[in-house]
Image 1 (spheres, rainbow, N blue to C red):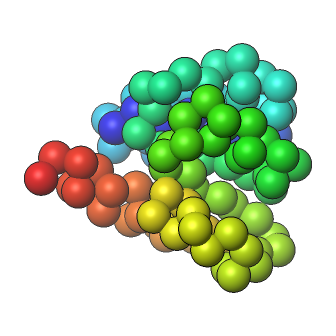
Image 2 (cartoon, rainbow, N blue to C red):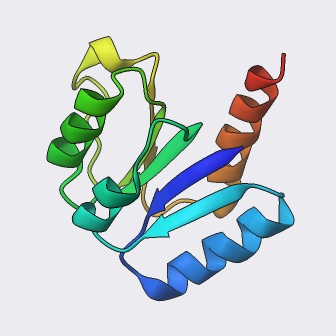
Length: 114
């Protein structure tokens, strides 16, 4: 599975990197919204977004690839926002167990290969 991960906290990024390497995920990392957009291309299975400026960044990504799968990690989640994105957006509220994120990604990986 190929991921683009936006995480501003360097320590958290290192934790993600170690876990994703163990899971054999191919992950690229960005520290801010601009870097995330610069690295984004149409070949990611999932984009993992930390809260940053989530709505604006997600809109920019969707202009490039409308059906991009996005996993949003945020302290404040409104699950009713943009119900039309239900098929391509997963929401996980912070703080969360890393296992929660991994289980969502593994489920998606299984779906991609079936």
